[in-house]
Image (cartoon, rainbow, N blue to C red; front, side, top):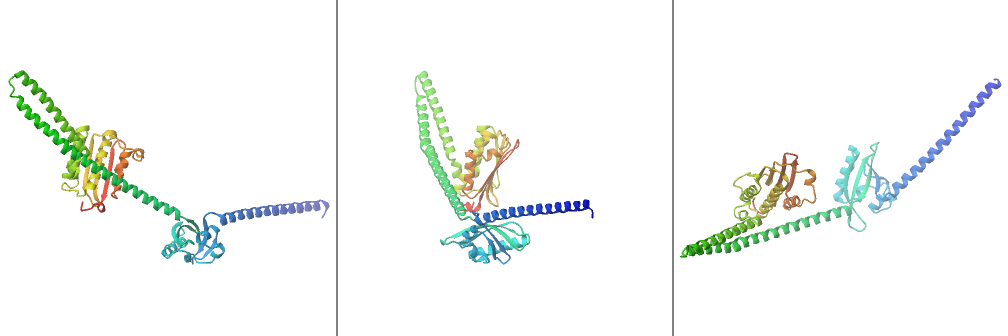
Length: 387
């Protein structure tokens, strides 16, 4: 071996050694980085505000963090190896078993709510969100205490029910006030005006006996003017009484009342309005439901007159398999989604609340340029007697 070859081999060995040292330093840096990252993940796992744990096929707990331990009310160290079913209520064990079996066998992400006893004695509601490990030997579970959320949701539901009951009561009171006012107008003021009309007719007959033709004609002209004013007053009273509470609704029922309202609507707006009863002989016996459906028709017709630009309205009402159905269809411009969902549309809100107060359903759908359709269904359970 000459000197040149020795130098080449020495340089090669030096480069190889340098590369090996560089790789070692790089490996140490990567290991340190991984250790730091692992430590951070471990810290995050241990001190996360929600619970993390692993559970195998037999329901034994493996890894568990402090968040999960707080949910179960024990130390994290004492949880490892214990059966998770021992911490849940008897009513929740079957749900938990189904949840774990579904995770291990199905592999899909699943959600389950269980109840566990707390140290205070009152049960906690815990939500489990789990997924299966890659080797299918265990599942990873994220646990969160949703007791307060459930309590808040229940309170909100009760609050909404109370508000709905209050709204229904206020509507009932208002309807009773309308009924009484309509009766007073019809029976009280209407009778007085009728009596005045009869008195005026008597006066006209007396005037006709006057000897002076000029005075007789002048008096008769004045009497006829009084007669006209009284007739107009009687018509106003009848319209006001009918607007407050149509007597037809109480005497003849919902379908004739809707027909009368449709006729008045057509006369007032010039828009054709046709009523198609599903069964012509139907008589809805529940007065409160009849009033609610009638008011929905009134509000729908008012909205059509104001906004729809329609030429035809068709109303169908009567018994159905679900209970009692009502539909109002127009051929106008069609209500938009933004309009139907507008929280300031008090008329639509009122119609919806009237239906919901009886456990019914309300919907309004519009097709641009083709019109809108209102659908209301009141279930059989809402009727005090047979519908």
